[in-house]
Structures are given as structure tokens and as C-alpha cells.
Image (cartoon, rainbow, N blue to C red; front, side, top):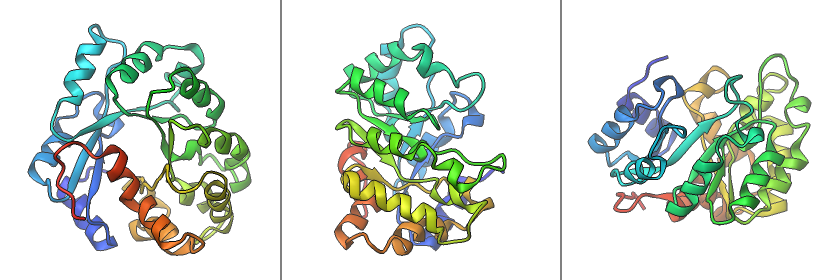
Length: 258
């Protein structure tokens, strides 16, 4: 459903979120203009942009450098769960891009559900690459039970132990909502397992809003960490809910609320 930056910001503020990071919707292809316009017009509320990028066009390094030079640029995102992109990790199609991103220090955000071993190989091959695993490499839908969605959870934990990997701890409501109601007991248990295995330092909360809204509210997606995961000490909760992102990924010159 089309949604303006101002509408997203208003709903975020209502949920208790000061600033958002704009991720260019996959439906826009490689066109990031709307995302960067939103950051430019609402720097008080849009901290930065995670954009889409053509990894296969000529002059890869020059284009990536130009992308990262834009005010508000945070990094590049690929969604690798579609039929046409599901084998990009296994077949090595993105290797030139990973090499260029490592050289330029450009963070890479990958949604590659059920591909934790492949993601681990990338992280080991490019040890200076800053790799963010979107949605904790989880998948949902198609009638899958919560047990199916977390069936490869130990592979995810092994991936999270790698020093150049950050886990975007989103998608827990989606992974559980078809089997459980909020606050999603199984998802909470798996979140705690990840936290106890690797700590909070490289965990980044994400809402997956507005997509998550067909299963729970924006506020519930936040409250899953803010309230349901009550085992988190206050300092770790603050780190997961923005502190880690600001420390490691906020673009230079970004205006920060705190």
C-alpha cells in the first residue's frame, strides 16, 4: 500500500519512535529518489537511507562510491528471496559487489531467508565487509508454522557469532503470528537464545513497517523488544532499539535526537 514519508513518520511517533531509517521499497527497483528526498525534507525524523543498487551494471565501484557519497546514505540492500534472486549467494553473482563494498566500507543489508550458511561464507570471505542480516534470516507465510520458521535457528546463531555480522532483529512477529498471538512466546524464546549467545552489541531492531501491519501494530512490533523481551537490561535494550545503529551506521552529519 503506498505510504508517504510523512505518514510513516507520524505513525512512528505515535508508536514512540523518534527517528526512522528509510529503506527503499523493492517495488521501486533501483530508484532511490523518493527515499533521499524524504531524508532531505525531514532530517529531523528520517535519519538516513538504505537504498537499492544495481550490482551488475558497468562501473560498479564508481557507482557505489557515488551512491554512498549522497547525504544520508547508510548502505545498500538486496532482497534474495525471490525466484530470480534466490541463488545469487550460492552462485557467486554478488562476489564483485561484495569486494567493492568491502573496499569502500559500504554496509550491505541482505535479506536471504534460510540462507545463513551462505551468508556466513560471505562474511568469512570478506572479513572487512559490514554485513547486516535483514529479518534475522527468517521466513514466514505459506502456512508455515512457527516451528518451521525457526527450524534453522542454530545456523542463524552461528552466523551471528561472526565479528563482521550484525543481526537486524526484526520479523519475529511475522515468524510467529500465524501460530501464536502477541507477545509470541516462541519468538521471544528464540530472541533470548540469540541474545544470550552473542550479546546485544550487534543486534539492530527493525520494524518491517508497514508490511508488519497485516499481523500486528507498529507499536506491538516495537513492544516485542521494549516490553515482551523483559530479560534485556535497560542498557542493552537501548542499544538494540537504536543505540547500536547510531553508533555503527548513522551517516556522517546526521541529526540525532539523542
